Image (cartoon, rainbow over all chains, first blue to last red):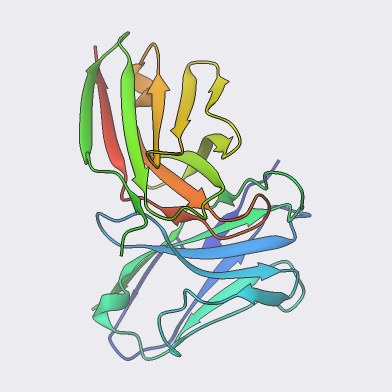
Length: 116
Length: 113
């Protein structure tokens, strides 16, 4: 079956521009996560959706970052006024969203964002 | 404040031998621990997990050990194969069910013939 897909795979932008990164979760998965991985680091949590609502957005670094999931499936991570420090690989993961048991997160290949 | 630490950035092991990857954590609220494997240009792939109520979980060549009192876990791969060469991330979660993962910085494992 299809896994988590992310588009684009690579994005190069200039400082100050706006970017959108898209994530298509595994069909039927209700939970969706965004992480950011900088060079030499592990993935760092940004935001988590259960259905359409953001259940935990405590990882968003500032108000330039915003994410939506309007129909409970596809999600878009939006970054305004990009800065060079935003350069990283942005990873999306999805899970069944079940309770009472391990809810394994499955990751997409990521979008490599480079801000010049 | 790094809550999950992998102090060895790299490890080199001969094919057929045992690989031992280590992970330490500081937050006693962590309840679930996972290992992910990552190849270049791919997302992390789930490998194995362990709940805080256990001290060992085994899946084929992979075994994870948890020492709660020491806040330490390890991943054993035996026998190691060249295809195991990848970056391995340790991750922890505060909840048994759906929750964010806190990752370590990773250990690059190289298995040579």
